[in-house]
Structure formats: C-alpha cells, structure tokens
Length: 437
Length: 79
Image (cartoon, rainbow over all chains, first blue to last red; front, side, top):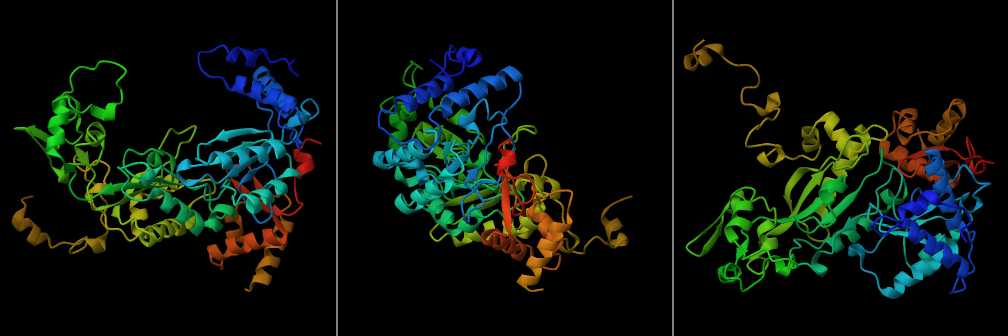
C-alpha cells in the first residue's frame, strides 16, 4: 500500500514507454523489504515521500524544492548540491534530499564488483536512487541527508579511491567517449586525455573559481559519441590531416554486396541492394568523392571529416594516419535561448601525452573568461558578447578560413590597422590611377 | 597588500554589506582591485578552507559569504 496516493503519477505509467514512476515505486518497495539487510541511514520511506512530493507539485503546478543550500564536504566547493523541500512536515523523508556527484570512470567502464560496491554504499547512506549517468556524464546519486555527506565522502575516497565530481561554478566532471578501447575511428586516446586533464585541473574541479560552470568533453572522432560539440564549453574532437585510407578491393566488395554496409546495422528491414552513388557519394556534404571505373577517389582538401562514408564502409575506408584533434569552444544547452554549438578555435592540434599544447589553449581561454566573463555567463555567451575574434587573439591564433562560419558565402573578418599594409591611410592619387571616381 | 590584510579587508567589507549575505566571486575581485584575480580566488578558497567563509551553491552557480551569515541549514530546511 503506497504511503501517499499518486493518481497523477500513476497515469504516467500507462504510456507506452518505460516509466520513472514504476522504477521509483519498485525502489520504494525494495527499501521496505530490504532483502540485503542494510542499516538504512536515511528514512526508509524517502522514495515514498519523494513520490508524494512530486504528486503535490503536479497538483499545485509548482515546485516544492527550495533553491540550493550550504552543504558540501570539507575542502570541496562542488560535488554536493543541497536540496531541501518546503513541505518537510508532510514529507519528512525528503526534508533533506541532497544530490551527490561522483567522477565516472573514463569511457564508463566499470567492473560489476565495483558498481555493486558503489550501489551498496548508496543503499546504506542514501536513497538508493541513482542517475547513471547525468547530462554532464557523471554518476549522480539522488537524495541523502546532511549528516551522511562526510561519511560518504570518507568512504568513497578512503575505501573506493573514488572522487566527487563537479557542480556549481566549477570545472564539471570531464567526460569522454570509449575511444581507442573499442573504436577504430578514435584519432587520439580520449580516456587518457580525460584522465590526465581531470588530474591536472583538480583545483578547478573542486574549488569554484569560474564565472559559471565549465565543461570539457572528449570525442575521439567527428562521430561525436559524447556530443562534445553540443554539450561542452571546450570540445576536443579527434581528426586527421592526411587522406582517408581507401581499400579499393573492399569498396568493390561493398558495391557487389559481399560486405553489408554500416557493418550490418539497420539490417532489420530490406533496404534493397547497396547503392554506393546514392548512399555515399551523393550524400557527401562537400561533394568531394567520385566513383569512376571501379575506383573511389576522395579530394581530401575539400573533405570536412563528416565520417559518413567511413561509417557506411568501415572495411573499405579508414581514418588517416596523421592524427590529432580539433578544439571547438562555446557550446551550451540553455532552456530559454536554444542550443548553441561550439565554434572551431584550433583546426588541428597534436593530442599526445602529456597534452601540453592543449593545456596551453585551455589556460589561455580560462584566463580570458575568468577576467571578462560576467556572473553566470557561459564561455559561449562571452564569445557572443565580445566576439570570436577576441578568443583567437587571447590564444594567439591567426584567423584562417575554417574560423569563418560561412567562408564560401560570407568570408567576413575584421582586420586591425596594424595587420593591413599601409594601415587605414592611402595615397588618393595613387588610388585614382587605378580607380575612376 | 599581504594576504592577512587582504583577508581582513574581505571580512570587513562583507560585514559592512547589510543588504545581502552571499556574493559572487567577481564581487571579491572588486573588493581587491589591485590584486590579481587568480590570487583573489585562491585567497577566497583558502578562507573557505579555514572556515571564515562558506560556499553556497544552487547546483549550477556558486556564491560565497561569511560563515554563518544569512540563511543557514535550519532556515533552508524550512524550520
């Protein structure tokens, strides 16, 4: 029997999709039956009260959570987010309902044993409810009380060698794709870079010193499995400089139907015979490919590494050998303004351990943004307000065509007087020799 | 100005602000215009570690105030 009637939430369960309400009810029941015999340190009915509070919010059309709070663990300014409800008498189980963020393993590789230990700790000292993983990519634990925080932190750091993640005006928990561990498209070791930079910038992760949040994400190739270009202020995306490697015999095998396209994906339906022209050549965004006389050719100079041809014919086409990364900056996903993608800052940069070239760019951008950024202003907003050219200047980067949003139709760039031969003054008589009035 | 003087100036400035109790990090830069911003942020973090100041976080934004000033846990719990 549910502690609080929840007719509005119950209705959500009737939809065609898996329901978070069903999951919460299941978790609430598990806390009551407690089959593994945990000494539960937060109220047993925490999830019942959470369901009741949510139902009340649906009825009232307003939230019953308060805004933020002073909670944390000693020495850290992030990783714990204070949550208090404004109906503590009716729902005492969620009077405190703090969120804890944990740094996820790079590439999200866990052993089952480690995952179980983390879950056991959270069943013992928290609500047991998790969000694996949050939008930032980290492990999110939902709901504990203030006295549990230091206990959780001690156990995590001393027993499990596990750190908290980022929250507030901090560097947020960096996130990467699986990279070279499982993917032949990875142009650099994303897991190594994520781990290295997480260690390098511990102070930024745990002690707030930015105008607002700041996110790194590491994609091994332009397929963008962690969507760095859409979700991070500083997106590092693998790329290569030289030609896509072509195995002409394998191309013929795809054309002849001997190898299934897309590595056999989308095979649940008969799409007809593979058509190289229609499915690859005609879809190339820069029209830099042709297939003539049984030979595939790619004009590398005009290829912008969209990955489509490689994805369709992975056995025939391989990424080039001169590998590194592109750096793009300024993405954010705000509620009101609409999504903003990152803009290209560094077209190609070496991405080898110890990543010194990349650290130099990061620190130049931080120095500028910490100086110029307004309170609660993301890097992307500072860029819009002060101009992308300013970011190029602070990083000491000379503008090239790739920095212009539409170089083929609107190659507009502001020049400074000292960058133009002769500056802004001219000899009008010399000018008139070539130009009539 | 050495660190001890800067810390005193921060404390005195915060005590003199009666209309609010939580401040953005950038407000601290304005209290100490002659110091490098990076040095101010390190100093503020040191003062938090020493227990003079404390963080307040909404989850997305962090603010800083004198320890014990303004709304505290009890008030935030609705008591």
